[in-house]
Length: 82
Image (tube, rainbow, N blue to C red; front, side):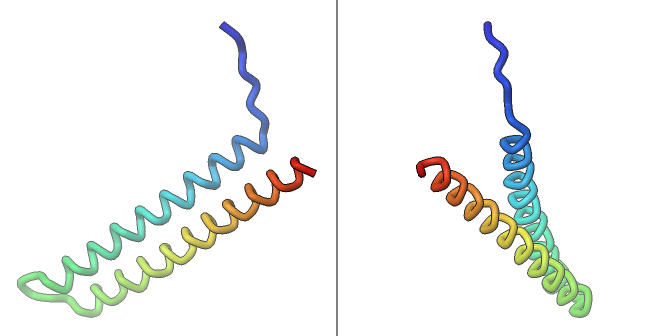
């Protein structure tokens, strides 16, 4: 039974990836909430549009973080190969 040492960069990378995935999941919640508000017995269009806007903003930030995380990992691996 050995002790595995994990670097701080690996922990930061994992947290960044999990944060991006969490933001994408939260955006899906807001999109579903938007559909629910629009198709209720008494639709609330203003709240539905606001929920869709929040969902789009959160999705955009989640995808941006995920893309930056992936580019950083590729650049790190390319630097290690040199």
